[in-house]
Length: 212
Length: 114
Image (cartoon, rainbow over all chains, first blue to last red; front, top):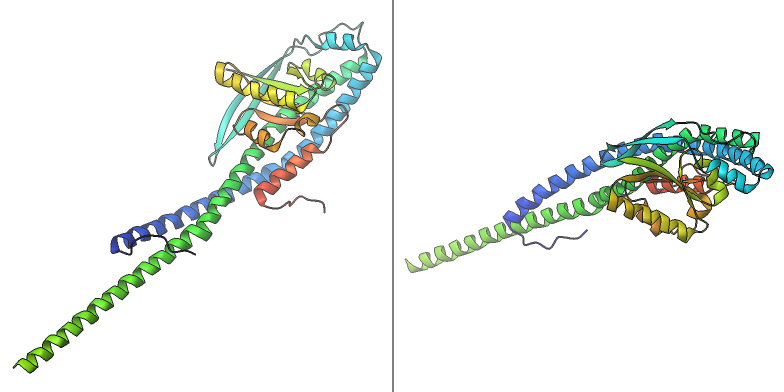
């Protein structure tokens, strides 16, 4: 705890008292924000964890099919079969504001057929692989949304926690200490003035007595 | 404004997504991947037309990108950068990232090994 470097006057004291109040209020608000963020984060992080596992498993299966397909086909054929997609993605993005954290919301629509190649040159495995990719894709979008949300929340929680701690352990105690120091000093001054006045009065009185 | 989805990775890991209408970027090492990511951001600032809202990136590439660079890229609300496992299967990077987020937010790893 350190006493702030200010002059000990009544004006500064009043000012500091105001600042203590503001700091305490701010601390309370930030603490509430931290709790709110944490609640949201906990809700989401579990989902992220499960969904990620799910997506990774499903993607692994899709890749497996793709691998079988590419084993049966020439690489050029696979490439030419897949390189000209007719399917189109429409992705809409909204950003939501949760406790000053900007969170994206994805909304996507698919259009067109994903199978845009001839049946002659390709194998059925490729179809299976593509269907698997197609199926996992909405999950992937969802994962993108919640993982980004969790990431943004984690960063915000960290900074909020720092602020709360700084207020709680540094700024508020320092202010309180300084307020105490100044009020003591003012009290001391006051007593000193009274004593001086009393001494002066006593001197005057004694000189009056000896004079008369 | 039109939002797009991109995928960065080696050819065999991205070709399956191409058919779904995802914009592919073929890339084999972390430095190139970083270049692509940075270029996406500067394109966003310049043109303001097509934006990549979601960037899927191969796990093998993203794990070699340094933390500082990664933080710079993911600072804003968009794009959402998501790691996907490659054709060899998951490397555990995704789970590791979740663990790191929990640690950052909570202060300790509460989902750790039991």
